[in-house]
Image (cartoon, rainbow, N blue to C red):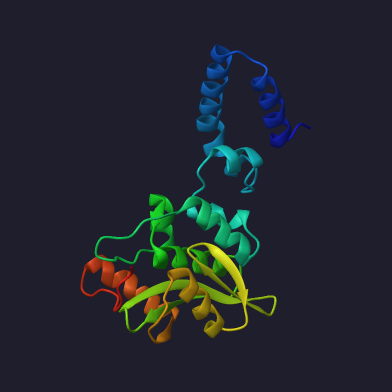
Length: 210
């Protein structure tokens, strides 16, 4: 049996030795193959995502959980696929919405990572680190995995001993040299409230990002 990664390797080796016209033909062929095969891949393989689909197709949110097995991997896949961009009006959105549009700010990325970790059976929540003097805050995902405390800030993964340690990392990342640092943890209900409120435009988060 020839597996997807073997087919990909054969095509790549052939591609590197061809002229430009042939290369263009190969690219068009791969695009057609992606359209025809990629969409049906998760069905014909019994729900298991193949190497081909992972490389050439954009996975939907429910499929993404099959590609990760730890918070570190969850943070990495979010960082690679969701580009940082601030929201106008600072709207909170669900993980699936953020994934589909491909961009979001710190709380969107934190929600996506936390939800992805929970999808694979892990412990994860969202916290906001505030700087009282500047009147701004930064959202992170955090939790425990294999009895170790972890955080993810804009998709960057760290092992820490506590949220207090996490606050110091955020302080360095944000270049906050002064101001009192406080931490607000958001449970699932509070997180959902913020998402719903943003959709309805009834309220906004109590902090302002840089």
